[in-house]
Structures are given as structure tokens and as C-alpha cells.
Length: 333
Image 1 (cartoon, helix red, strand yellow):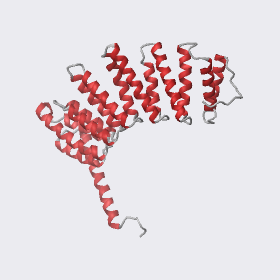
Image 2 (tube, rainbow, N blue to C red):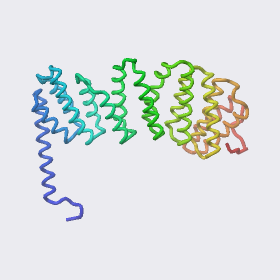
Image 3 (spheres, rainbow, N blue to C red):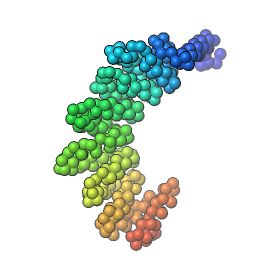
Image 4 (cartoon, helix red, strand yellow):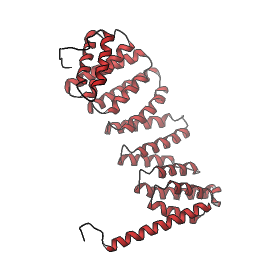
């Protein structure tokens, strides 16, 4: 027998497991076709889902079986049934934390619970993200829980939003490439700004700019902070504020390139910032800066995969600004 090849006993055990699984699956399917809503149906579906969490039809049948029980109409009995279901799902999370169907079922359980414990669920989401900070399911579930906490809050959810905002700060500080944390932050910030007076709002936006610039210095080629930069530009109160932000960004990018001129993403962002400044405030970009932008685009066009894009942009700007699209002088940025 070749090394690693299963023994006859192991093959027999595997065959029996397959037969048992098929028999259980057929039994659950027969119960489902009859529309049986009983504890026997719940036991059978639980046993099957413990072996395979990806059976969305079985999850759906399990919900119908719960709703068809006589004791479902009694709030206290329903509370007991669904608390036991949450304990069952706690074991399922450990087996397959990324099952779409399992998370959908947990949402249904909590919405059907007479007295859900949202603070407990928020703690669960925090534990999931402590293990895997970029877990899509963990973030999606956390947003669901936070929405329920916000709806029940006496202050309209302001304290909940501030607490969640602080959580995203913590996550971004740990890993500035955490796209989910940046995305969550962008969904929270508008409500937080709306609840503050103008000076506090301006201070909050300045703090956001400092946070995102710190992330850019940490990893200049990561796209997440740059995308958040663009979003911050969009939510500025007016074009004057956008120009101030762009000027600060241009200064920061130049400083970054002085430290590491090989970074390509900052080069592209520098050119984009200068072009946007010129669009928002015609004449604000001096001739020297226009020449700088053209040199940056020339450097970027050296990449054969993006040469056409940057050459076209450079030629268009050359016509717009009256700057020669081709130059013999090679000046480092």
C-alpha cells in the first residue's frame, strides 16, 4: 500500500459515514416535503446541519418548523426555544464562521426573539473581529446589531454611533488596510457630523484628515486610505473647503515622495489632486505646478500596463494648459 493511501478499514468507515449522511439527508427531505413542524424535525435538521452548514434549504425548513410549533405562540416558550437555538448556532460558528446561511438564520432568530440581548451579540461580533479583523460576516453582523441598538437608544443612537466610530478607529489603528473598518467609518461619520456644531464639525473633519494621512504614510500603496480620502473630499461643505483639503493633501504627498520617490500610488494621487484643484479653482494651480503634474504623468506612463491611460491624460492636460505634451527634459519629481 502506497504511503498516505487509506487502509481498508478507513475506506469502510468513510463509506459508512457517507451512507449515514445520505440517509439523514433523505429523512430530512421527506419531513420537509410533508411540511412537518415538530421537535423531531428540529432534531433531524440540527443533526444534518451539524455535518453541513451550507444547506440553505434545510435552514429555511428549520425556521418553518419552529414557527409551526404549538408553543411558538407563547412568548416565554419561544424565548426558551430560541435561546437554545442561539447556543446551537454558537457551536456552528466555531465550525464554519463564514456560512452565509448560518448568519442569515441567526438574524432571523434574533428578530423572532421576544427579548433579544443585543449587547451580548455586539460582544460576539467583537470577538469574531478580534480573531479576523477583515471578516466580512463579522462586520455585516455587527452592523445589523448596531442598527438594532441604535433603534432602541433613548438619545436617537448618538452614543451608539460614537462608540462604534471609536471601534473603527481602533481597528484602523491596528491595520490601516482594513477596508471594512474604513467602510463602516464612512457610514457613521455623516450622522456624527450632523450632531455637532460647526466648530466641532470642523475639528472632526481635521481629525479625519490626520487619520487618513497617517494611514497613507504607513502604507502608501494601499488603496483603502486613498479611497477614504476621495470620500472625505466629497463630504466637504463647499469647494473652498475641498481646495483647502486638496492643498494639504498635495503638501503631504510631496513630503511622502521626498522620503520614498518609488511609490506609484502617491504619484497618481498627486497628479489627480492638482487636476482637481485646477477644476475647482481655475488659476489656483501655478505654471510650475502644472509642469510638475506633467512630469508626474510622464513618469507614470513608463509603466507599460498603464502607459496609454497616463499618456492620454497628459496630452489632454497639455492642450488644456498649453503645456507641451512631450518634453525632452527628464526632471525627477
